[in-house]
Length: 145
Image (cartoon, rainbow, N blue to C red):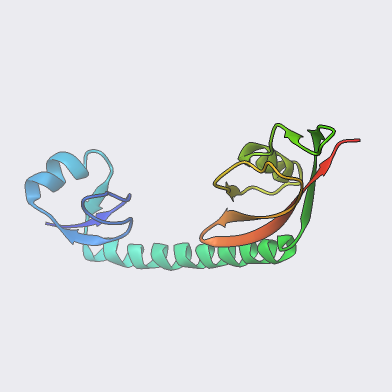
């Protein structure tokens, strides 16, 4: 039976893919759970229209994210940290601290940081804005006076 997937299914395919599956699998599992629908000629035409709209929306979102990334590139975010007399840092700046600072400025993103920042100075931190759009920001740690 020819079906159109309505959601991503790990073992079968991605949303809007047209697949051939056994009749029992389609009727007893996929269709009752709204994971797929039968691929009639009209359903395929509707799918093409939906796919075009979906792709256009994705392009718009990606373009917007790329503009945001250009605006963020090289932007500085400063954090004050407590230090000892010899310049040693008490504590660190982690993903959550950076994410909170970005969220306060209206920027939703995932911080790609392997380890917490534990040294004074300037650090380059990569952030993922979504849809494969990434950029780097400057995170500056300075001593609290």
